Image (tube, rainbow, N blue to C red):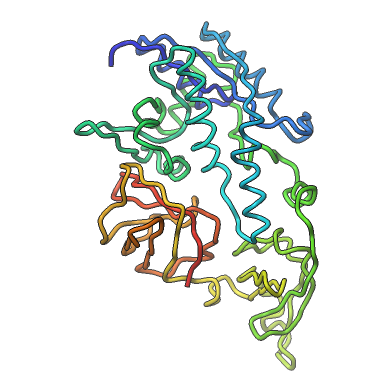
Amino acid sequence: MKPQRVVVGLSGGVDSAVSAHLLQQQGHEVVGIFMKNWEEDDDDEYCSSNVDFVDAAAVADVLGIEIEHVNFAADYKDRVFAEFLREYRAGRTPNPDVLCNAEIKFKAFLDHALRLGAEKIATGHYARVREQGGSFQLLKGLDPLKDQSYFLHRLTQAQLSKTLFPVGELPKTEVRRIAAEVGLPNAAKRDSTGICFIGERPFREFLNRYLANTPGPIQDDRGRTIGEHVGLSFYTLGQRKGIGIGGLKERGAPRGAGAHAPWFVARKDMARNTLHVVQGHDHPWLLSQRLRADDTSWVAGHAPPPGGLAAKARYRQHDAGCAFANDGTHGFDLRFEQAQWAVTPGQSAVLYDGDICLGGGVIAGAA
């Protein structure tokens, strides 16, 4: 690739730092941008934005590149956070990272970079882009433990045509080795986890500020009321911790029989404001053979043909074989070869053909 002007999203983490270094090694003119996406109660206790910018600036200094601090907080609040709250109020569990990539990192950031004269943008995501016959494919990152194509599945041809993922070809161990060898100050910095606007703070405490909490009954699979929930928005399917109920023995059951089997959130009945829970990880209510998704987005610009593919119904999951059927409008159905656990409305169902990420949609329901 001929040398180009590449604007790199420097997050303060090691992946984007090594991405900038690799691009320099390839002869590109590299400029860094630090994206600030959240500013309400932005303090050092929970939100690491200030620390991250210091780290990003230190990386830019070592590499000898310019860095610009850009505030996308208003865009983020309108395009990502508002949708996040809408989904939670409707009883679903959204994935803000997917929306943030589509709306901020590869839209607002890309637009800003192009105004700066960038020919390409780059991020530290573990994914790859391949051009084939004039179109662009989104591929999994080569490190299976770090692959982030799931979060990037809403990217378009126009966005991918302008995007580089320099660490997508590398395992994480090699990325850290390069960072240490070059003397990057964040070589050993731990990876960030969770949602950027929540940081390390307790999730329920954060949601409490924005969502009404209407308590209601918790019922088991036999219709018995066994507790009270604090508001359906605060629970997600498959949740085990923080439900607020202990073990429940069958009347007359021998001592120790099922007394402490863990409870899992299995269903949310918004109409009746009732939370349904079950005991046991593999309870039938937690398993789904089929799912329905809408709000689709396809990397190629159109849906794949019906047939056998693989899918992830959540990020931390192996690809699952499935039959794909497109409804011809804005939705699709998947029938899995093996039942999937805790398929959750609001999360993304992402489709793959081998290493190629085809796109996906937002899960609307499962059976």
